[in-house]
Length: 172
Image (cartoon, rainbow, N blue to C red):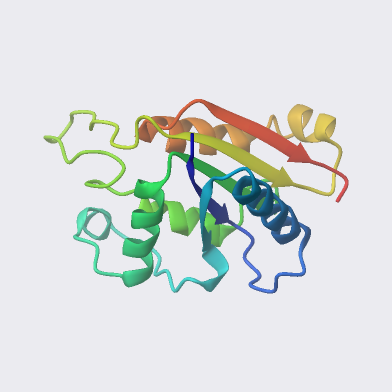
């Protein structure tokens, strides 16, 4: 069965010489050779304004990069997210991407004040691949994998995505 896969490249540098780009390319090539369809989003190439208020968060989206990203994510059965660990977490541009794209009306429903919104991305699965310069043990023990857990629980699971698998590529 053919899967629709969207690769989200979270490296903030658009130069494709970084290891995360190589990993994403290899993943895409393998998926396509297996008969799956692949789309890509490179957050480094998107013009994403920062959200600075609740009103901006709730406003209708008019940004073409955000709308195109939502289309690619909505189309997908499976998401794979690549990012390098920066200062113990995901790069700021990737966090800005999730804030812009996973908004009410797309990722969660616009329910009444004080009520939990419906998870609108249910039925999708994900894999998160994090590259880092430290050993996995140190990341898990000292940092308690907080950025990975936050992405899993507070963004992906919150919007209905699951199951979510993870891969740590260490000592890069």
